[in-house]
Amino acid sequence: MLPDPPHPIFSVTESPPNIAGSTHFMPLVRDSYKHIAIFFIADHALHEPHPLFENFLSICDQYPSNLRAALVARTYRVGGFRTPNWAVDLKNVIFLSTNNSTTEKEYGLDGEQQMGVLIVRPDGYIAYSTLVDASGSALSKVDKYLSTVLVKN
Image (cartoon, rainbow, N blue to C red):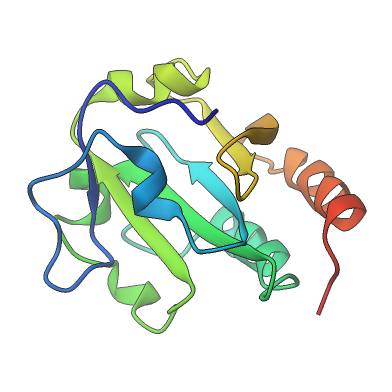
């Protein structure tokens, strides 16, 4: 199962933003019967578009009826409790933030610079996980995995 984080995660996609936070992760990302692709970007900036994010989102866009994308960043890297300016038109993406670096450790990351992707099945179980480096080469493996379990639209 997708573990709950040890510290609150905040939804900055909600309007108004959920500034109380939640330590229950699944209700923040669940979207009925869809798989969820969660990209933990750790301490990297999210206040401007980046080729890694764009690549991740382009992979997720191939499965609109089967997959929902979520990005988890540090609150100060998102620019506060708001969706990043460059992403206001991305309605199918959930933007989440956390104030604590140990949150990523619960999901197998170092809590510093390591980034990673988790694919979560609709029943809450983790189906796939991988580290993502600055080159983004692991994203092609994410795409390959998704193409074996989901139908592209």
